[in-house]
Structures are given as structure tokens and as C-alpha cells.
Length: 115
Length: 115
Image (tube, rainbow over all chains, first blue to last red; front, top):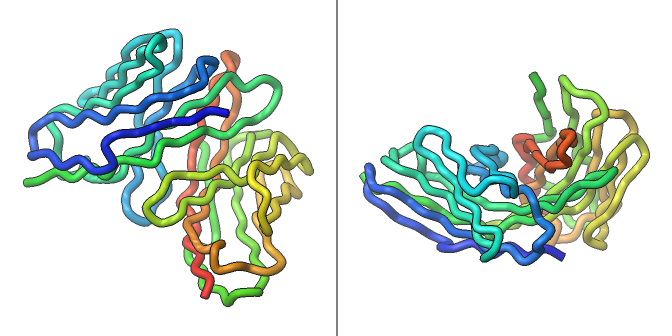
């Protein structure tokens, strides 16, 4: 089955600086890589995703990159703000054929934005 | 737009008592539905998923069960809770798009404490 490793487990950055969270996956068949943001006591919120047919995707201050050869994908947050403080999860999924399948999640990164 | 509801939001139950958590989705038809569990400080673990009424697949053997009595209703149950069942239970839904990408959206979660 798929295995997703996420680093670092905790990341503290100064407000205004950039933050980078990295994940690796094991299943070369995986084709979908979402990123979720989870605030304390709430459900995870999908913030951005990337599909295996592209190498990079950007949405305002957030960008994701994917290296299929190395099985790496990363989340980049620029100009960090206090509201970016949360736990971030990466996940991977292989193509869903005729049914449902769960996402395989990393263990999460606690991002702390220092004022 | 689609919304997903979970209740109760918080639950405290004694060991050996039964459990019933409910999840409903609005604004979509024939969704894929999922139950995940999140232990404190850890990632999300897929418990069950369903592609249709009465169709349940289990990912992890345990004393929990799931049912889908209606198209947009997913229930997580237990006959006798264990201490190890404590955690944050999340329901999610997805609709497969034509390219077979597994985009999932999470509910607000139920915090279960077994004493």
C-alpha cells in the first residue's frame, strides 16, 4: 500500500517569511496529492491540490510542486501571516477506478507563525 | 453548494457503552463517503468507505462498524466502546470526477472521549 512521509513535524517561522513542508510517497501509481489545513478542533480543509499531470500549481501565497521521478511533493507558503498557524497534512491517492478509496495521509506539520 | 454535517460534536462515553455517530451530506447525489479517525497528535486513519447505499468497505479491523442506510447518510457504530476508541472522528465525501481524482471534503468532526 501507499506510504506518505511528511517533514518537518513542527515548523516555526517569523511572520512574513516563507514556510516549506515536504512529503514523499511510495506508490508510483499515485496521481493526486492534496494538502489540508486543520485548525484546532476543526475538520481538515482542502487548501490546494496537485495532479500528476502537472509539476507546479499556485494559488495566491500558496504553491505546490511535484517531482514524480523522485516521488516528492512540497507545499510552499510565502509572506506567512498569523492565520497561517495550523497543522498541515499532505496526502496521496492512486486513481479511483469504479469505486472509492481513502487518502493516505502524512502525520502532519504543526506550523507556528511567530509575530 | 455542498455541505457535510456531523453530530454530535462532542461525546463522552463510558467503556463498554454503545456508540452511534452520524454524518450527512447535502447538495450532492451518490457521494462516496468515508470515516477517518484522528488520534491525538497523529495523522488521519481511514476506517471505512462506501460507494453506495448498503456498500461498506473496512480498512482496519476493530470493534467499530459502519452503515449507509440512505444515499447521503453514513453512520459509525460500536456495540461496546474501548478506551482506545477515543479520538477525533471525521466524515468525508467525494465525487469522482471524470479523470478519477479522489478529491475529498471533510466534516467538522466528532470528539469522542471514552472513560
